[in-house]
Length: 126
Image (cartoon, rainbow, N blue to C red; front, side, top):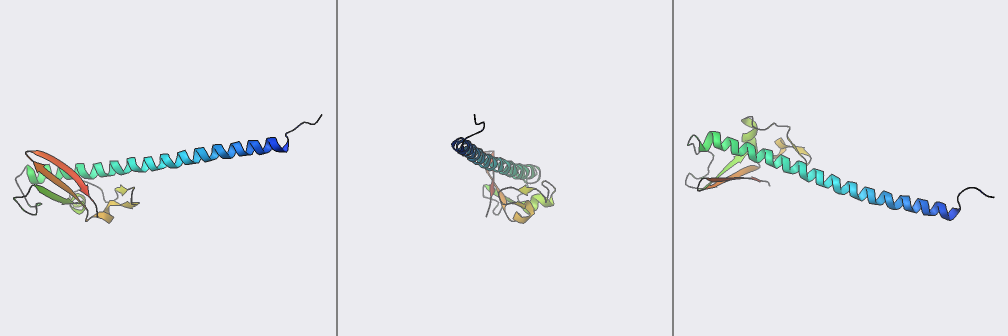
């Protein structure tokens, strides 16, 4: 009696392993993309929170309007460079979407709009 696998059995096992490898690799790529999206959302949240904090402490609360382009407008632009210079975010804060540190995007800004005491902070990217 011959012990061992036939050629056909070996081909079937190899084919099954290949299918399993393809399924696992496509799932891993999807997970990696979701992780990058999550990291980017955290990055944006940090910038928007820092800008809102800066606005509350330095512009709105003290009555200063130096960050507004027009004192009669209902918005304020706070650049990333301002947030870095005021120590609200670190220069090495990493932007996972672009693969660079935030210092590379110092001209981007957070737009703060306010209507009837309601404030919204939204990152604006070039």
